[in-house]
Length: 172
Length: 184
Image 1 (cartoon, rainbow over the protein chains, first blue to last red):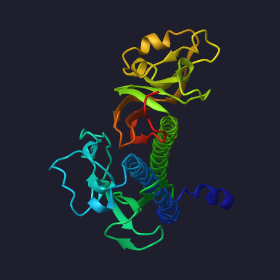
Image 2: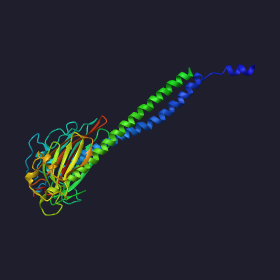
Image 3: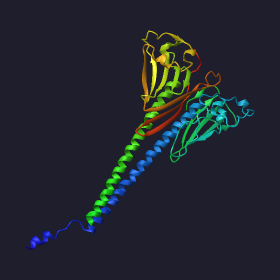
Image 4: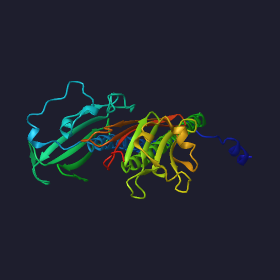
């Protein structure tokens, strides 16, 4: 008789048990969510880097088409008209200080490149002259270090560089 | 009461798992598309950089001298390449004429590839076959710069849009010819 009473008085989960189990589960979920969020962030950063690298390569490839400016004419050269597109650039020197950014990233003729992104990608070009291949920066010289820097919205900054000479291009 | 709370929490966990799964699927799709676009752009750049001469580039087509395979300084029909965007199949295709074609040895001039309007004629040449360079290309445009310049190298600029499963990716790039780029 006593045994039967005991069995009928059994119940399911108590509120306390449920809360404890839920708390344990919540802690476990929180533990799983953190690496998931980190992975998503990493994937996003990888995509940004890929886009930035492609944009840097495009501009660096474009500069490969330009002739090396005559160092003797650098001081007296005329400036390009305001609003000149990259298709009007005459040589490497015209890329000095060039900068653009999404969503107004332009093609060489000034049209839209159609690159869309969640944030803003900024490109900037520096052309640094050198008198010797490994020498320091100079106002003019027979060597130039062309560097394209792309700053993505959140990911790491991407830089691509190439050393060119008056006589031939050096792939670096 | 405890069972109700537990069920609610389990439901929330299930919802989270579904959301994470969807997120992963979407990320995977975007990454696959980005990888495919990168490969296509690299292949396109490599092909165009190595070209001897580019005759014309327009929205969706590039006609060029792939290379002087027999080193005779002349542009034979079998050395001509045509990259075309096949909008119906969403592909980028490279058409070339096989060396075994009866017309393969026909010497071409710069004028023969000076326009991309004759693409249909080129593709109708016996032995002309197309090889897919990229899939899922929903739009493609090409532009040629410095053609005929004596001081600057020819540049082919391209904008390719890749689309699949509701995702889209635009790849903007350029290829500068390493050869002189002058007509034979």
